[in-house]
Image 1 (cartoon, rainbow, N blue to C red):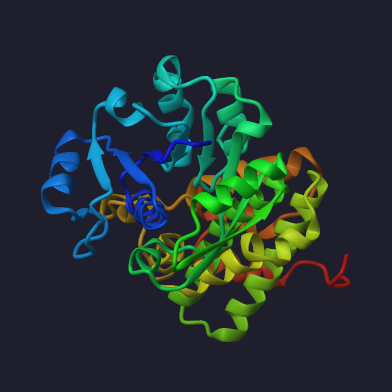
Image 2: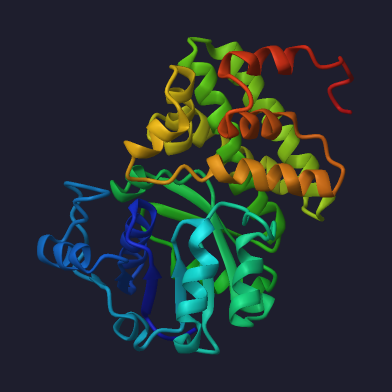
Amino acid sequence: MTASKVAVFGAGSWGTAFSLVLADAGNDVTMWARREELAATINALHENPDYLPGIPLPGAVTATHDLDETLDGTDLIVLAVPSQTLRENLTAWAPRLPKDATYVSLMKGVELGTLDRMSEVIAEVTGAGPEQIAVVTGPNLAKEIALREPAAAVVACADDAVAQRLQERIHSPSFRPYSSSDVVGCELGGAYKNVVAIAVGMAVGMGFGDNTTASLITRGLAETARLAMKLGANPITLMGLAGLGDLVATCNSPLSRNRTFGEKLGRGATVDEIVATSTQVAEGAKSSHSLRELAERHDVDVPLAVVVDEVIKGNMSVRDVMDSLLSRDTKRETD
């Protein structure tokens, strides 16, 4: 991993913010944008007006819609596209991706249908081994990262040496990465917190206060841990940045698109109305179904994922959510 150039696929808010982190860490970054006109605008203004307006990008960050230009001279590929589009995009790019590339997933979701985590999708489409696939996750709200507010994250790879090399590659003055080998725990923590944030947002939208939101966050963490541990994750991961840290940031911040999505539901908006007026994807709206299915496959109880999925499908009203959760049979907290 000697090259200093990094290819970032995705010019949304997180792809753009992470490109800034990479540049601050000493890398030259080429950011692939789905829309050619957005790439041209980013290069002309040295900012991304569609997603992070008013925040200047370093000179080491450029944008393009050209695949060959994006990949030229790089061995490190960062993926920041919406999780449900990853397989389609990677399949189109695969013939031109370097065989020895290291992939870094910034995506937080579980694929509908296959129930694959993003690292599994990358492996299936590209043929990359586990030592070539890493995940970066944590309490990383894009706007705050782009403003260079102090933040920390986890870099997870099955190969500890690769995780540590990536850790050095993305360590900037305002962004502190920790390394891990628990890819499963990091990915499930990142995906599940979006679902919990929608539930918290619904509670806030209905006018409930801190007791309610704290209860939802805590029980959401319990659900996350149950499922992740069943799939082989280290429970300590869920207590750290990739679990509790990301959950707290996403559930408590008005910058969170998933919490905002839930708040709008709580105030009476429909899913279609919210989608029609938003330019950004609330990953939890789709991951709620895939995580529910994944949990059912492994016989894990996930009441929050179930009620969020039912609301998204239109099978349950937001007003019914709290009644459904509170009327469940009582049990020991640790069961």
